[in-house]
Length: 237
Ligand code: SAM
Image (tube, rainbow, N blue to C red; front, top):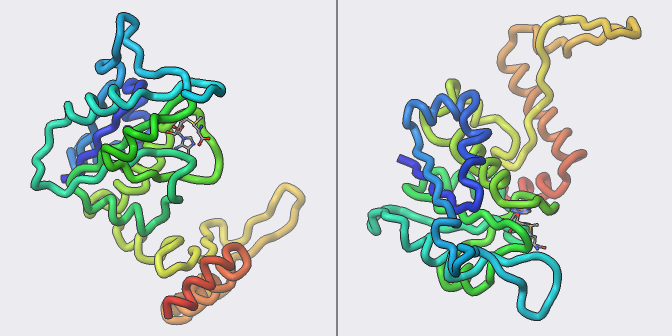
């Protein structure tokens, strides 16, 4: 079973978003396990500090390497199991759907959440944390980033989604964005009294034609919105 172990100074922020909807149901049904480890249990000195000022000066505080190491060593897992350690940081490699797919197949994913200005680089290097970013922007801490990453991973675990076939054609499978989707009403009159119809083919009942239309729309959308992805698709042919 997929086991997420979160190293954080704010364990009360979990399961947070992960307790809702399909992911929350999967958590309740023990389709995955979530564990938090409070970094403050491994603080040093009389003040139980987990961070200190950066050497060389500069603003903010940095998580101490000795605190991170003690927290990591407190984790009791079978060494035979498939385990990876990641540190969430805006300076990491950008996460993508393929990466999340790989994480979702692990037995244990250990996630270090930074706060303040980040984590002492020695802890990251010595303890073999892979540095992962969830996007080119800076959050105040890694906890929301961990929930984003885990939500993406957990929905890929077999049995979590009610309709697993939705994974086959969604955005980023085959390096394409998903085709546009429509629902009722068939003709929608907006508040300015303008009528908007659903593309005719979708109500034709012709499954072959619908499939063809969706594929073409996926290509069109990807070319316009994510030309980088489209180039990748062409290269992977
Ligand atoms: N000083 C760091 C830098 O410039 O790269 C930013 C530190 S940020 C204010 C505090 C923490 O938030 C980080 O240690 C990291 O755990 C988390 N964080 C912020 N943005 C993130 C992102 N885009 N992806 C993953 N984690 C992020």
